[in-house]
Image (cartoon, rainbow, N blue to C red; front, side, top):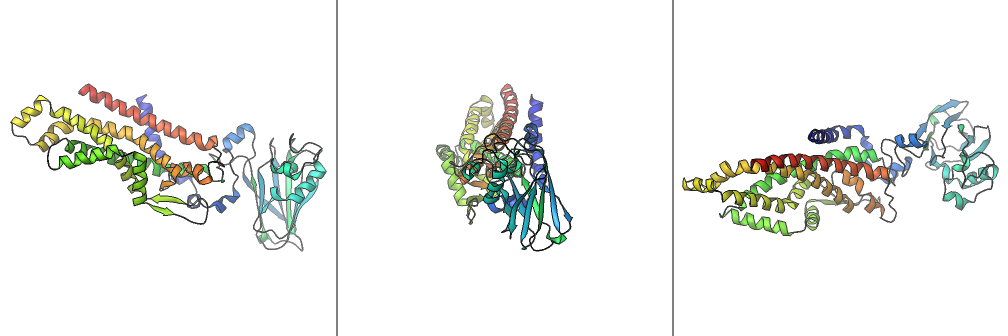
Length: 432
């Protein structure tokens, strides 16, 4: 099992290096820009899951130019209708948009200037006109709003389009042409089908690609945690050892460690973050958060857990200083620092390694937890976890594809480092 733990640690370290290179940089830069994600489906699972249960994929349709118009073909072979279809024009001219179903039935969807982009699910008059021709009974618009309006387009004629959806599978064709003349090849619009599945890990309530937050955020999460655990182990070693020595230096260090032990971690963390961080605010609803340098955050988390760790090391040092061979060293003229260096330090090294191992998962969880308070050092897993607070708890939907990967990763990392810590601990106590 120890090999398995080593493999887990090695995997996540490698993933923290390779993972950021698998995402689109613009996705990271626009993570808080809601308008950037308007061409993505909202709250859908990953494609591999969609393949298992037969959910439509999110895809761009490729058009062909014929006689001044563009034709797009969509092979619909699913049991559910896609979430939406977007038409993004590349001209300010009036456009005429038609839909042809697999049975050859033509429907007019739009005729006029497209403002920005066209959202087929919001074309009330066109949807209701198609519903009157295909659905039995004809639904009301309020009923369609609580269900997918595109069910009307992809339903079999003569069936209930809302409550008992029966899909009409086959190839659908979208024809886009100019209202008052032929379109040029350079006027080609873009057509995007927003399916019910997307990418490696799906999307959140805003349509953001969760893989971006997970893969890119692994570098900051694991990097800050390992660095913070290293700083914590080093500072705890120095403070714990020196605080056990009754000198002019040891007494103030002992008082400092006692104070750090008595301060609750969360208020201390918020205070230090407000001191070293800066508040980022913009007009977009997702951009209010506290940004802090990752290196500063590593030092902060080390300070937060330093009190308890240094007191534990101090106890080990005091226990060691009471042993007979230490008295013999004193009688031979050894100074306190010499005793600490040559006799106590070799005993402390295994415990410091153990402290480092068990601190990494705790720091990772703590940093991720701070994401709920919009305290985000760099771009880490806390960036993904901050969605509930920024979206509003009342409107947040905890999708399993958003929660499970992070929870599983945190659990595996915690298990691996704690298991390694137990290995060091067993050898340490056996030696003792």
